[in-house]
Length: 162
Image 1 (tube, rainbow, N blue to C red):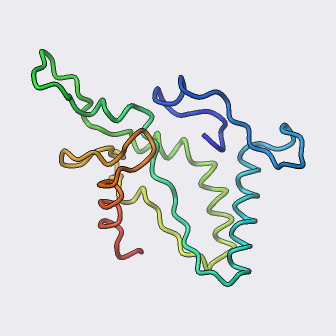
Image 2 (cartoon, rainbow, N blue to C red):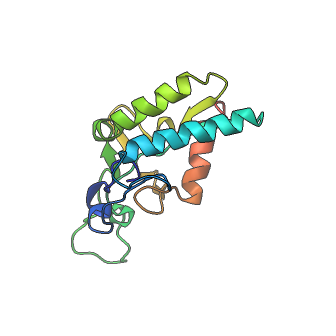
Image 3 (cartoon, rainbow, N blue to C red):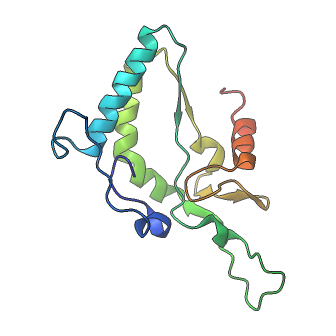
């Protein structure tokens, strides 16, 4: 949402208006959200490295684009089972949506080889799907934020990378 200016999927398209990022001393229309984000990222990483900090960059979790509650039925008795199955977004949709953003971030990171990079999607996606739940456990609290159990799951899956 920050870089495209609009939400993803039914969960966000109706909730939020267009977001506009800009630098405080510049006209709001001078740069795209993506350019503002990437410049801000460069400035932040360079400041941390200049302060001799050890930096780890985490690529964000996949946005699901749907209400995570649709993955389960919460009523004890239901006439029809309407839970979303699988509780997931297609991986190719996630990759396509983030392709331009990811390329810009990866370019910035490639110029700073001292930064450790961890991709959280590696814990949440297989070849076809990026999952919102695993084994009956909700990994997200909404369409793009991990639950406590989801965070624990991701850390367990990626422990060696951390």
